[in-house]
Image (cartoon, rainbow, N blue to C red; front, side, top):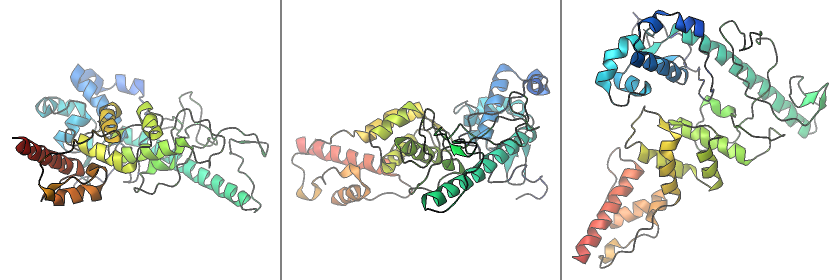
Length: 353
């Protein structure tokens, strides 16, 4: 912590991940010195970094690390090329005492969006509490801003659209209307995450096409939201309505299988580089439908295969013991299993020689 630097411009819990909108403010952007000075490459990198900062936590900030910034700017591993445009691409960002870079204008918009997200969560929690009281037989008035009511009577309509109203720093939405005091429709909640500590957006749902009329009804869409929250926590760029994700849920994918797939991809895309959903898709399919390991011939009796040893951590550990192998420090399950496969291949080759 450097006392000579300014304090962070937004609180550390400001998290806008899952919100697919960021105000651009065309007049401000195209009238700026950044727009006048930047080359095409620097301009593209700068705007890409604004979107990356919007999806960081805290929102509106970036890590002060050239390798990470290069990847977040969509320049891959070209750190040398990144450093040539760094100053222009990061114009407006300021280093703060927590060691991160903050953009004052972007942070101002992030705080507006975060306030709306927090208010909507509170309103939705109140609505759900009252509905739970009604189901338990207690008297409870349905809040007036329940989108499923009209004049106090339920209409059977759906739970509404994403509550994060697109607003600028003055509290106006994209039509220019003041939305700061108007009730906003709720988002579908994701309940029951029991495998990870969920990020803030797991309390909401951005499932596209969910036509559920009961916000508390367990559904496939809810599982899609849980899977999306888990993958976003692991650094995957994906939404609950993603076609790949829908297919995985329908195939019965487990959290362990998703973690396994991400661990394999991380061998080629180390953190903090985000993982696109298309990039992950092939690996998830290979985990869902692993290739059969052919039976070995002439293998010593103490190295017999544990049946389907690659499907669980316990079975993998047992197979490793039979081969006299142990996991290395910092080694993931994907790497460990690959070493086991290599050992088995070597044994089979020696036996056939």
